[in-house]
Amino acid sequence: MKWNHGPASYNSLILPLYLIYLILVLSGVPYSGTFTVYGPLVQPTLACVGEDVQLPCHLSPKTDAREMTVKWVRGSRVVHLYRRGQELEEVQAPAFQGRTKMLREDMAEGKVTVIIHQVQLSDTGQYTCYFQRGPFYNETSFDLQVAERKKGTFSVMGPVHSIQAEQGEDITLSCELSPKLDAGNMTVKWYRNQTLMHRYPNGKKLEESQGTEFQRLKQDMAEGKVTLRMHQVQVSDSSLYTCQVQSPDHCEEAHIELHVAGRSCWVHGFLLNHSLLELEVILKNQPSPHPI
Image 1 (cartoon, one colour):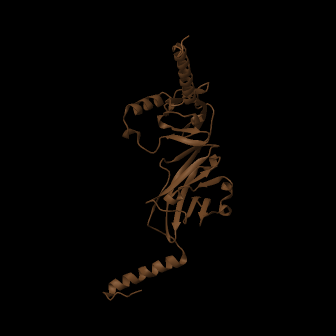
Image 2 (cartoon, one colour):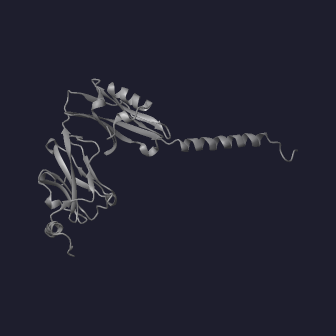
C-alpha cells in the first residue's frame, strides 16, 4: 500500500477502510456490489398443490453466473445450492431433497431457475435467491403461495370433445368457470403437457395495452371465460393442454386435447392428381400425329 502524504485526517480515514476491506476479503465474508439480483416478474408466485413451480432469478447487468455460488433458501433452510459447477444435494434441507432441479442453460447470461416438484401447502413462504462471486454478493426475496384444490368454490370446464384444426389456422382454446366468476383478479396458466406456455397476469400492467384484443380478453374474463389464442398452428402443436385457474385460496384446472392435421400433403396430392387428370384429358383430345 502506498501511503498518501496528505493531511493526517485523510490518512486516518483511508487506513481503517483498507483494513476493513482486507478483513472482509481474507475472512471470506461477502459484501454486496457489482450486480443486482431480480426474482420472478409476477409476485407473489402462485401455485397449486401437486404442480411443479419455477422460481427464476437473473442478474442485471447480464453477468456470467457459471462460476458463481447460487443459492435458494427459505428462512434458514437451503432449498438448492450450486457452487463451482456442481449442485450440492447433501446440504439441502430434508424437505427439499429429491424435489428440486436447476435449469442452467442460460447461466452465461445470468439467468438461473430452480424447479420445485410437486409443491405442498407447507412450501408456502418467503424464498431468497442469492448470488456470490468472490467477495461480492447480492440477493432478492419473493413469496411463494400454494393453494389447495378444493371442491365447491368454483370449477373449470373445458370442451367436451377434442379440438380439431388444420395446419396454418388460427385457433382459440377456451375454458369457463362455473359458476361464472370474474377471472380478471385470478391467476390463469396455460400448460402444454407440463410446460408453462402462458401466464396471466404476466408481469405487465394490462392497462398499458388498450387495444381491441385487450378489451375482448377483459370482457371474456369478467364473464368467467379464459382463452388461449394460437396463431398458425402446426402439426407439432398437437398435444394435451391444461387451463389452470387459481384464486388466493383455491385452484382448479381443465384439459383440452388439440389435434392439428397436416394440410400440405393433402393439397399437394390433390394438385398432383388434378394435374394428371388434366394431362390425360388433353392427351385424349389431341389428334393422332399419324392419321389413318
